[in-house]
Length: 348
Figure 1 (cartoon, rainbow, N blue to C red):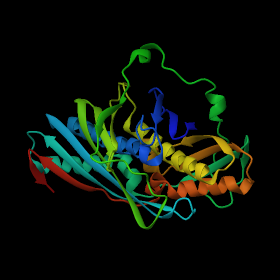
Figure 2: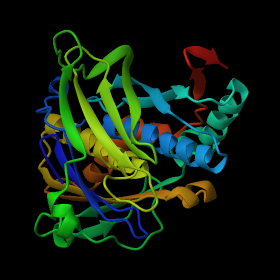
Figure 3: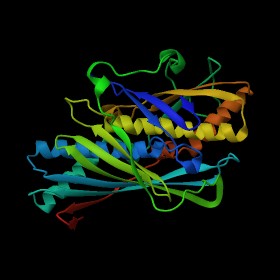
Figure 4: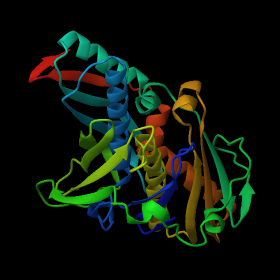
């Protein structure tokens, strides 16, 4: 659900872990209020946390002691054409990852550890091979057939308006838990400028981040920011421990980022075209770690209310998917560029 660029998601990965209610916003450059993390920041933090969890798990299994762990990960995106003219196209580039390890193990051992963790990361697997996507469209309460987009083969999804008639709230021990997401107060140098709606070359966006271990067994904290003048930094915690649930897992952050990014594109186009469309909400079915390896698709079920012609709704969904940087990420084959630092010395 969204109001302007403020969006809420309830994310559950399945199993015994709980659901998490996450909030996103856009920065001032897109007309947002900058009160919560931007969608691409969720994806960046999710990749950090997922990789950190794999590193910790593999190091423990191999008896490798890690006195310290730090990850610096950058995402690169670009867009050509005009978003508002309807010919915009989003693109994603390979991520750059730098892993810093404090360990008594030798460089070759640590380099192998990092390589295996990268291979084992389902978050990075989403980038290394194309992921099939399917869509379903519901207009004024009825599912409509799609003619220009890959249709989901899943059964009808429940409307979030019916599922969450009241905002969900934590119960029991979760009611007093600390918020795993916060705005740090730090900003990039410079003054915020409005984002252009189109370009004759490319609009480039870089999302930067750094991750550390809060607890050595897999509780992480990632600081993420958009590399633009005046952009705010946000901190997102993730709990990769199998027996704890103090924060969302990295994959939960990652999938929330995909939904938030898609909704931002919908909102921007609706506002620009002054469509009589409101009540934007969606249900997104995403694969878990094992299902990613098996090639399960991502299904997005979009619910819209309005008074436009029926073809307008599918056009809106198609343009949003084409300009969404994270849908472009799913469609691409992006091999990560990885370097390892061991006590100030780079190991390749």
